[in-house]
Image (tube, rainbow, N blue to C red; front, side, top):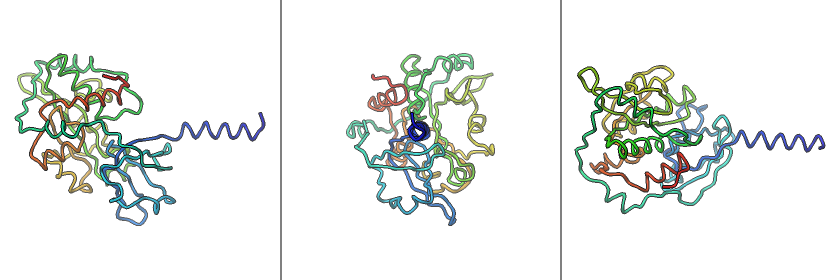
Length: 282
């Protein structure tokens, strides 16, 4: 093999390992306030892509990235944008089923009898997720399986990272979500997060958020999505509770806009979660 051929082989091999493809819709584009601020593309998958200087003028205005379009982004190992292209709609949701699945509900979560039982549920949760699986897909599968096997009505907690925090710490997500449960512990009911990927046991909210908050900031707990969405530069992080059926932040937006919450599993969403997180077809 010639020196040139060897160089090309090494270049191609290295590039293939360095590049990563993400297919997602765009949640928002943040241009920053300072002249040297990098443009950030916030994806509905929760990830944040950085736009290098030589791409700044090539990024379309926010309105061109409407919430319905899907794109395949290619990024490098530092999450800088290399290229993108619009792709076919990847959604699996049935719109009519989605609308009909919303109702006014008074959701009552299950109280688990003891910390030992909660630890058992944590231990039995499905592992073996794919390396590129998203948090909301894993959370959906874990919640669904606890409900199906144990009749457990769990909850979910979303953590939203502000633009200031993302920029300060070069953080890779703008949100993360995990199930949480109510547990009877020493005569009182406590809330504990069941984030199977990042924890070995159920954790209190603050202990859980500290995993992601490099400055150990106290996250403000909010009850409306707009309390975060309208103030994305204020503070470092926000926490918001939801029932187990809520899948992505878009559900929280609809809940506030319409005053409705999901009251059952949307099986298209559950099937998609299994497929994307575990490559399992239901």
